[in-house]
Length: 414
Image (cartoon, rainbow, N blue to C red; front, side, top):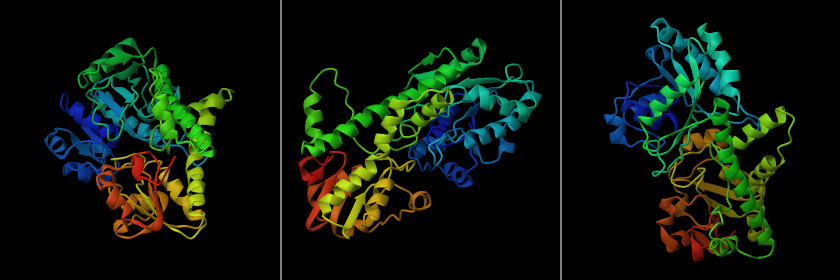
């Protein structure tokens, strides 16, 4: 397993229960934590990790010759919202070196990619890298496969051992082997995609679809605010229809929904197609944080106010800070002249500072503010109850709820 993050670790632990499995990650600190039974992502419990036969290492040389190499590294976007394939390319170069030992033993290994990419990346970019680094022939000495990850951080229902895995392979024989591998660890079965490119495409549209639906909700929330109509009241009424889809407005961050559509739109533009719907949805969702900051600024009636933002992670009850749009909200409020303090009981303070320049204040809940914004409704905040939350508000202050989690306890919501 190449990459032991939110995607790689749960899969590696599951596979280790059936096959001799080694997990590799370049993060030395991460490997040390895992060897001590600690998963900072919170996806694998201490006891399960400690009892697992999974071997972990940060040294590629320590990885044994294997029949399968599964790549689960991040595929982010750059500052221009273009796909950044540098990590998956680097991982492919590492795997290429590993393939040499497998080939010497007479194995014909299969390299499976789970990282989100646009159609064609596995065969047109990763395959040649593997060939160049291993001095072997793809499709003869080693083979390619793709099985898109479906990890939802913090979700204890749709775990790797229960979901349906989409699988694909370079040949029918490879597809059979990959299917058998995943069938061994999930009760949800596998779906055999028509091709590797089909499986890649399925991954990017799964999240692009959600992105577009949430963008619609964000836009109507903005429209209804001009009419002084609560979006939550509207959704409650509309939701009584049997085929109304239960999407809600909000800040769209994370490693998938806020990123994957840019992979699809990039490939579309390469082919000469203008992806208007996809980019329109992205534009609305990327603009949500600045819009919210402006609306809250109006409520505050001028700059210079003390603001507490509760939650920085991209969703509730997880420590995942990737692509946090709350950070954009904090930046926008600060840019409007407010003194913004941020608190999050789950986020890593060092990572928050490194990634966003945001200082997490562990003592922030002991002071009072002109505006308290419940940006991420972590369980720890909701368990405090109405009185404890309102105790953080100065006289005449406001309690704002961005996701409708507090009901009538909030003074301001979408």
